[in-house]
Image (cartoon, rainbow, N blue to C red; front, side):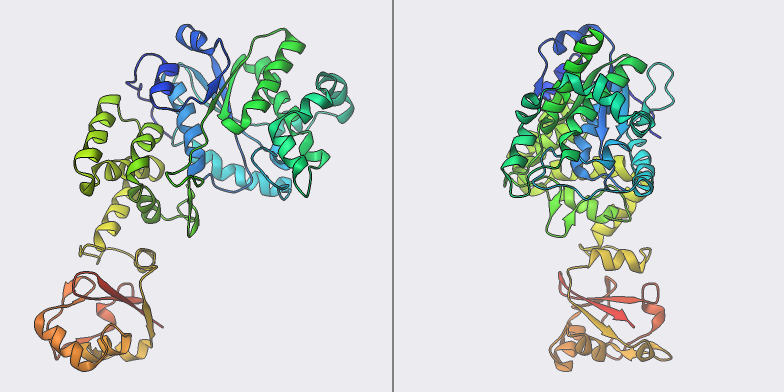
Length: 433
């Protein structure tokens, strides 16, 4: 669980959102409200998977920033609405989940949110709430009578998320069509129970947020506000967090800390300064200095390393960050004896590999010349011999120059793998079968 430290940002939290380029749109009076009042704010998180992904980091950071500026944060994990599915930003209907799967997903998400929000601070502790607590007990007749009457079909059809789906081949089901009303009802319940007057989210949630504010006005005569963030893309215009190997998850079992670290380290120069603003606690002066470094010495990638360090440490903790850093240095010849076989396979996932029988390395083992040739790292035993003589062969990043030398299971990593290298960057993985 995180320990809250006040953010040293410019002015109030609204000003911080502006200079961090996190503000896409807000209701007219919100700037003045945030400058003069402490509000209760909520953001919803989708429980359709057991882990959040890096696309969820912007709202997570936003909620944490609001808390550090003294506001009262609520994270809604949509156990109720997750059973329905939000049509916003979707071209087809989501697969519906059962209650057991949603509850399993909620547990993983709660754990991840706890790295960003402080639940123990005395003044404004964070809350995580499951909206199934109230949506699961509301009756359909009661809901239609008390809530549904405030929404005209014309109003709902005008929403961008609905219009897009109506124009698609599959259309939109009545189940998803009602999602806007359910989210609006969430806002009303939080307004009643906790005095919540601000809902925030991605820009695709703007219509749903306004619907909730309007429901509060109609049913309670209250004033509620909305704030939305830009949907993050990269310099190529593609969706943030999508790579060739798939989604970048916050769960280390789905995306290893090493892979997570590499994702941020590979950020394009055009994206790194906005990402530093979005995803770190660095101050304006610190980010401005890194922006200058990008212009003056882009080859040093100081901004990318700072970003990768900060986000990996924040999401996975100091110990996992240290191992990710250690794993990253292996590609540049660093010691690898303390790494596990699983970490080696992760680091060298894209490196050519060969499979060899365990029996070949038992007893006296296999000659290095035979190993180099059999693994395919060298084209022949003659090439292997010349490389060994010239000092160009490495076993597990340690120079190996003995032409008569042999390799045994004791030289392997975890009894499962050898890492061979010729020259500076030509690697070959030998999997022991």
